[in-house]
Length: 237
Image (cartoon, rainbow, N blue to C red; front, side, top):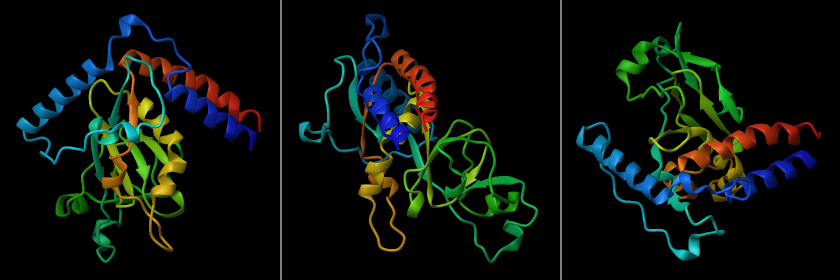
């Protein structure tokens, strides 16, 4: 479809820094990355985040294209806290009957804002399992089956099943910039999946993927442009 091809071209130009002007007052994303590292270290000290094995250094061979001088290449795992969800036991009716807490599955992801869920779980399910409620603004990614690469941004505080992965971005990373980058990467995630009847991509593999990180001001300008241009692409169908 013409619209899909055009949308992909627009997204590619955006994430390569070709749609926006680089402004000196934006600063350098390397300084932003240093602030992100300090924020992460503080969360670890406060016990709000577990210390994990450092992600591998980025090699020149991995870098797929050139980016503006004031941008920096990072891994997806560098820009936010990622975690997969959990499915409460289906044998426990009290975990589901009359539930009030939205429980997101891959079918609820619509490549846009997520405002409702097909199923709900109970507070008892949250209290008695390892389910973590994800906050408004969390960027969601589908990991399993035909929905691999589907994304969404939560507008409701929710739980999610194990076929979904969520990212809470650090300060200085605009969640909608991440959303658009994941939208561009959808086909790539499908190529990285493995398995037979139910192919999947793991969270561990997702966070190793690269993302070009602009300064925050430019992230916002890119998102503003894409918010305008992508609906125009859709109107061509």
